[in-house]
Image (cartoon, rainbow, N blue to C red; front, side):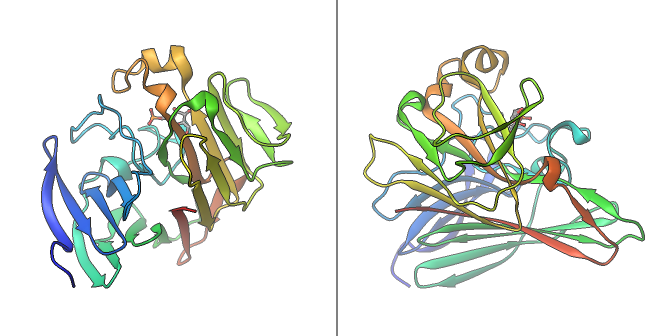
Length: 274
Ligand code: TA6
């Protein structure tokens, strides 16, 4: 392994983080929420966005990166977006190979469910969230790898891959069919809940596009808070909406999963530039 590669402990604000560096990429993962804060392929920009005003508190979610929303999405339970992103995860193992580092976290036991997270930092970033139902009853599982991507200017990007896909506009609870690429010019909060598609963020300021590939998911959420909603969030700068967009790999809405006793489900998001 070349110098300066491997996994080291550090801090971000006052939170402990794992700094990963190898020949292919570098990344920062907070133990709080098993939360990927940053992912930079070698010689490339950071794919992920992180708010300057993010909380860094044990009882608050980090704003940006890849929140692990589990074992429910949104307000399907309390707290919103579940308990995993507030949990202090422990690193179980780091598997280091040339050009690839896989972090495996100790499973998180919550009631009858067990969540396992693995993060692979290579020329692609792979986050795997596996749920096992160790109880005696079905569990209605909704979840998200709620990725925040850095963009040059929200008004200039396009998101492709969802043409003709059905979505819920959660701002008014109406259903629509996507026509062509997604362009964002207002608050946008949509759940595309019948699609396995790989999405691509095209940003004219950058030569390479961000690809969001997934497995174990038939739903994708696209979110930008725009002006008014940004001002309502204390952990989100008033003008930060122009530099970010969420394209989230989820099991949400009609893609909520019923997990039978003894069964497992893995939600995987695969991010890369191309
Ligand atoms: O994924 C979109 C969404 O559900 C939006 O409705 C918005 O609430 C966003 O998540 C962020 O939620 P949070 O609880 O992290 O502020």
